[in-house]
Amino acid sequence: MSIRMLVCILVVTVVAGLVYFWNSPFVDSAAVFVEAAQTTLELLIVSALVTLAISMAAGIGRLSEFLPVRWLSIAYIEIFRGTSALVQLFWLFYVLPLFGPKIDPFTAGVLGVSLNVGAYGAIMVEASIRAVPRSQYEAAIALNLSPFNRMRRIILPQAIRIMIPPFGNLAIQLFKLTALVSFIGISDLTYTAYQLNQTTYRTVEVFTIILFIYFAIGLSITIGMRLLEHRYSRGIRLGGAR
Image (cartoon, rainbow, N blue to C red; front, side, top):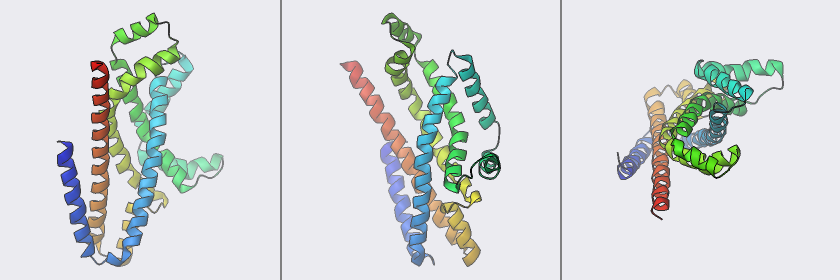
Protein backbone atom coordinates (compact mmCIF):
# COMPACT_ATOMS: atom_id res chain seq x y z
CA MET A 1 0.00 0.00 0.00
CA SER A 2 1.35 3.43 -0.95
CA ILE A 3 2.21 6.15 1.57
CA ARG A 4 -0.47 8.40 0.08
CA MET A 5 -3.11 5.73 0.65
CA LEU A 6 -1.95 5.23 4.23
CA VAL A 7 -2.16 8.97 4.89
CA CYS A 8 -5.71 9.02 3.51
CA ILE A 9 -6.69 6.15 5.80
CA LEU A 10 -5.10 7.99 8.74
CA VAL A 11 -7.04 11.18 8.00
CA VAL A 12 -10.31 9.25 7.69
CA THR A 13 -9.56 7.43 10.96
CA VAL A 14 -8.82 10.65 12.84
CA VAL A 15 -11.94 12.40 11.51
CA ALA A 16 -14.17 9.39 12.23
CA GLY A 17 -12.66 9.04 15.69
CA LEU A 18 -13.25 12.71 16.52
CA VAL A 19 -16.85 12.55 15.29
CA TYR A 20 -17.46 9.43 17.38
CA PHE A 21 -15.82 11.00 20.44
CA TRP A 22 -17.77 14.26 20.26
CA ASN A 23 -21.01 12.27 20.12
CA SER A 24 -20.03 10.01 23.02
CA PRO A 25 -20.74 10.53 26.73
CA PHE A 26 -17.02 11.08 27.33
CA VAL A 27 -16.73 14.42 25.56
CA ASP A 28 -16.12 16.13 28.91
CA SER A 29 -13.31 13.69 29.68
CA ALA A 30 -11.08 14.72 26.78
CA ALA A 31 -8.25 15.69 29.14
CA VAL A 32 -8.21 12.15 30.56
CA PHE A 33 -7.75 10.60 27.12
CA VAL A 34 -5.11 13.18 26.14
CA GLU A 35 -3.11 12.49 29.29
CA ALA A 36 -3.36 8.73 28.75
CA ALA A 37 -2.26 9.08 25.12
CA GLN A 38 0.66 11.25 26.21
CA THR A 39 1.77 8.59 28.69
CA THR A 40 1.53 5.90 26.01
CA LEU A 41 3.56 7.99 23.54
CA GLU A 42 6.23 8.78 26.14
CA LEU A 43 6.52 5.09 26.95
CA LEU A 44 6.68 4.23 23.25
CA ILE A 45 9.40 6.77 22.41
CA VAL A 46 11.65 5.87 25.35
CA SER A 47 11.12 2.14 24.78
CA ALA A 48 11.90 2.51 21.07
CA LEU A 49 15.24 4.18 21.83
CA VAL A 50 16.16 1.57 24.43
CA THR A 51 15.04 -1.24 22.11
CA LEU A 52 17.19 0.12 19.29
CA ALA A 53 20.26 0.27 21.54
CA ILE A 54 19.65 -3.25 22.88
CA SER A 55 19.02 -4.66 19.40
CA MET A 56 22.23 -3.20 18.03
CA ALA A 57 24.33 -4.33 20.99
CA ALA A 58 22.95 -7.87 21.11
CA GLY A 59 22.84 -8.29 17.32
CA ILE A 60 26.46 -7.23 16.88
CA GLY A 61 27.35 -9.21 20.01
CA ARG A 62 26.13 -12.42 18.37
CA LEU A 63 28.71 -11.85 15.66
CA SER A 64 31.55 -11.08 18.06
CA GLU A 65 34.68 -13.20 17.96
CA PHE A 66 34.99 -12.72 21.72
CA LEU A 67 33.19 -15.81 23.04
CA PRO A 68 31.85 -14.38 26.37
CA VAL A 69 30.19 -11.51 24.48
CA ARG A 70 28.69 -13.89 21.92
CA TRP A 71 27.44 -16.31 24.59
CA LEU A 72 25.95 -13.47 26.65
CA SER A 73 24.13 -12.11 23.59
CA ILE A 74 22.81 -15.55 22.64
CA ALA A 75 21.64 -16.23 26.21
CA TYR A 76 19.79 -12.90 26.39
CA ILE A 77 18.10 -13.41 23.02
CA GLU A 78 16.99 -16.96 23.73
CA ILE A 79 15.69 -16.19 27.23
CA PHE A 80 13.65 -13.15 26.22
CA ARG A 81 12.34 -14.70 23.01
CA GLY A 82 11.41 -17.91 24.77
CA THR A 83 9.43 -16.48 27.70
CA SER A 84 6.25 -14.44 28.01
CA ALA A 85 6.55 -10.66 27.78
CA LEU A 86 3.98 -10.28 30.55
CA VAL A 87 5.88 -12.63 32.87
CA GLN A 88 9.09 -10.71 32.14
CA LEU A 89 7.35 -7.46 33.02
CA PHE A 90 5.99 -8.90 36.29
CA TRP A 91 9.41 -10.29 37.16
CA LEU A 92 11.09 -6.92 36.66
CA PHE A 93 8.46 -5.05 38.66
CA TYR A 94 7.68 -7.49 41.47
CA VAL A 95 10.66 -9.86 41.77
CA LEU A 96 13.75 -7.82 40.86
CA PRO A 97 13.20 -5.26 43.67
CA LEU A 98 13.54 -8.12 46.16
CA PHE A 99 17.22 -8.32 45.18
CA GLY A 100 17.94 -4.59 44.93
CA PRO A 101 16.43 -1.10 44.75
CA LYS A 102 12.75 -0.75 43.88
CA ILE A 103 11.99 0.11 40.24
CA ASP A 104 9.28 2.65 39.48
CA PRO A 105 6.46 1.46 37.18
CA PHE A 106 7.54 3.56 34.18
CA THR A 107 11.12 2.25 34.27
CA ALA A 108 9.90 -1.33 34.73
CA GLY A 109 7.51 -0.86 31.79
CA VAL A 110 10.25 0.48 29.53
CA LEU A 111 12.67 -2.29 30.47
CA GLY A 112 10.05 -5.03 30.19
CA VAL A 113 8.91 -4.00 26.73
CA SER A 114 12.37 -3.08 25.43
CA LEU A 115 14.13 -6.24 26.57
CA ASN A 116 11.45 -8.43 25.01
CA VAL A 117 11.28 -6.66 21.65
CA GLY A 118 15.03 -6.03 21.64
CA ALA A 119 15.64 -9.79 21.54
CA TYR A 120 13.72 -9.99 18.26
CA GLY A 121 15.43 -6.85 16.98
CA ALA A 122 18.84 -8.38 17.66
CA ILE A 123 18.04 -11.25 15.29
CA MET A 124 17.11 -8.69 12.61
CA VAL A 125 20.34 -6.76 13.17
CA GLU A 126 22.42 -9.94 12.90
CA ALA A 127 20.59 -11.06 9.74
CA SER A 128 20.98 -7.62 8.14
CA ILE A 129 24.70 -7.54 8.83
CA ARG A 130 25.11 -11.04 7.41
CA ALA A 131 23.16 -9.94 4.31
CA VAL A 132 25.84 -7.39 3.39
CA PRO A 133 27.81 -8.86 0.45
CA ARG A 134 31.04 -10.59 1.38
CA SER A 135 32.89 -8.40 -1.10
CA GLN A 136 32.26 -5.40 1.17
CA TYR A 137 34.06 -7.14 4.03
CA GLU A 138 36.95 -8.01 1.74
CA ALA A 139 37.16 -4.42 0.50
CA ALA A 140 37.23 -3.11 4.08
CA ILE A 141 40.01 -5.54 4.96
CA ALA A 142 41.93 -4.48 1.86
CA LEU A 143 41.69 -0.87 3.06
CA ASN A 144 43.36 -2.01 6.31
CA LEU A 145 40.46 -0.79 8.46
CA SER A 146 40.19 -1.95 12.05
CA PRO A 147 37.25 -4.24 12.91
CA PHE A 148 35.50 -1.32 14.64
CA ASN A 149 35.91 1.08 11.69
CA ARG A 150 35.07 -1.74 9.30
CA MET A 151 31.73 -2.19 11.02
CA ARG A 152 31.04 1.52 11.57
CA ARG A 153 32.00 2.88 8.17
CA ILE A 154 31.38 0.05 5.72
CA ILE A 155 29.13 -2.72 7.00
CA LEU A 156 26.65 -1.06 9.36
CA PRO A 157 25.53 1.75 6.99
CA GLN A 158 24.60 -0.86 4.39
CA ALA A 159 22.98 -3.13 6.98
CA ILE A 160 20.79 -0.28 8.28
CA ARG A 161 19.13 0.02 4.87
CA ILE A 162 18.25 -3.68 5.07
CA MET A 163 17.02 -3.34 8.67
CA ILE A 164 14.49 -0.56 8.13
CA PRO A 165 11.55 -2.60 6.70
CA PRO A 166 11.61 -5.33 9.40
CA PHE A 167 12.18 -2.69 12.08
CA GLY A 168 8.93 -1.06 10.94
CA ASN A 169 7.07 -4.24 11.90
CA LEU A 170 9.06 -4.37 15.13
CA ALA A 171 7.98 -0.81 15.98
CA ILE A 172 4.33 -1.81 15.63
CA GLN A 173 4.94 -4.84 17.82
CA LEU A 174 6.61 -2.60 20.40
CA PHE A 175 3.67 -0.20 20.35
CA LYS A 176 1.15 -2.99 20.89
CA LEU A 177 3.17 -4.43 23.77
CA THR A 178 3.06 -1.10 25.61
CA ALA A 179 -0.52 -2.00 26.57
CA LEU A 180 0.95 -4.56 28.98
CA VAL A 181 2.15 -1.79 31.30
CA SER A 182 -1.45 -1.29 32.40
CA PHE A 183 -0.97 -4.45 34.52
CA ILE A 184 1.57 -2.65 36.73
CA GLY A 185 -0.56 0.45 37.21
CA ILE A 186 0.73 2.85 34.58
CA SER A 187 -2.08 5.15 33.43
CA ASP A 188 -1.70 4.52 29.72
CA LEU A 189 -4.57 4.22 27.26
CA THR A 190 -5.45 0.65 28.20
CA TYR A 191 -5.39 1.29 31.95
CA THR A 192 -7.47 4.46 31.53
CA ALA A 193 -10.03 2.62 29.39
CA TYR A 194 -10.33 -0.10 32.01
CA GLN A 195 -10.82 2.45 34.81
CA LEU A 196 -13.46 4.38 32.87
CA ASN A 197 -15.27 1.18 32.01
CA GLN A 198 -15.34 0.18 35.68
CA THR A 199 -16.90 3.50 36.71
CA THR A 200 -19.27 4.20 33.80
CA TYR A 201 -20.08 0.71 32.42
CA ARG A 202 -20.02 2.21 28.89
CA THR A 203 -17.92 -0.63 27.48
CA VAL A 204 -18.68 -0.08 23.79
CA GLU A 205 -17.97 3.66 23.82
CA VAL A 206 -14.84 3.47 25.95
CA PHE A 207 -13.05 0.74 24.04
CA THR A 208 -14.16 2.05 20.64
CA ILE A 209 -12.54 5.40 21.41
CA ILE A 210 -9.37 3.65 22.58
CA LEU A 211 -9.43 1.51 19.43
CA PHE A 212 -9.51 4.64 17.26
CA ILE A 213 -6.57 6.14 19.16
CA TYR A 214 -4.47 2.99 18.99
CA PHE A 215 -5.14 2.54 15.29
CA ALA A 216 -4.25 6.17 14.52
CA ILE A 217 -0.98 5.94 16.43
CA GLY A 218 -0.08 2.59 14.88
CA LEU A 219 -0.83 3.89 11.39
CA SER A 220 1.30 6.98 12.06
CA ILE A 221 4.21 4.70 13.01
CA THR A 222 3.76 2.74 9.78
CA ILE A 223 3.76 5.95 7.71
CA GLY A 224 6.84 7.23 9.50
CA MET A 225 8.78 4.03 8.88
CA ARG A 226 7.71 3.99 5.22
CA LEU A 227 8.96 7.57 4.81
CA LEU A 228 12.23 6.68 6.52
CA GLU A 229 12.67 3.67 4.28
CA HIS A 230 11.89 5.70 1.16
CA ARG A 231 14.23 8.54 2.12
CA TYR A 232 17.11 6.25 3.09
CA SER A 233 16.74 4.16 -0.08
CA ARG A 234 16.62 7.33 -2.18
CA GLY A 235 19.81 8.55 -0.49
CA ILE A 236 21.53 5.27 -1.29
CA ARG A 237 20.43 5.43 -4.94
CA LEU A 238 21.60 9.04 -5.32
CA GLY A 239 24.88 8.20 -3.65
CA GLY A 240 25.37 5.29 -6.02
CA ALA A 241 24.53 7.49 -9.02
CA ARG A 242 27.22 9.90 -8.13
